[in-house]
Image 1: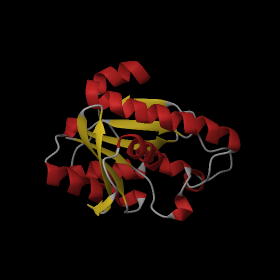
Image 2: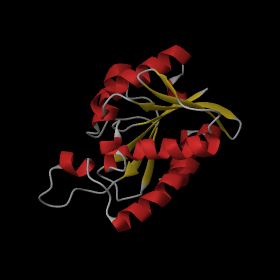
Image 3: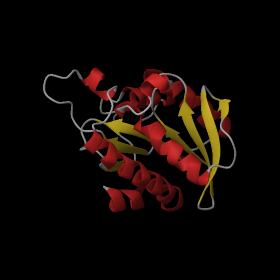
Length: 185
């Protein structure tokens, strides 16, 4: 089984913000490939999915971003998912809006949900798909920026990026991280 985790903040207030692109990709995957309604488990919302013949669990933590690792750790341990079968989707300030970047592991790069996940799992060695949200404009605090909504132009770019990221998750489930790094980075 594959475990695909989209990071974000729960609640209406955060819907559509830059920090919630991981949730947006999971929603797209659930719409296309979900096998039933979401269930509350593992401090999150879980949807079972069939990603082109690969069984997957789509997990949106309902903890706030900075505590995402709690949810990831619980689901990973319950299903005994090996690190290579876990994919974490998150926003990235250091990538242009809509740019996708797969990584097989590495540091959190300052992304607080990823940082908490690394801390809780005790390793940086698990795949992640970073989705670019662009750098904060001059004078903006980065925390305010990640909780802001996309501009009209950026929203159109992100809609396309979310669909591309959902496609990329399916490719990852079938072909693995190395193939995806060559295909999307």
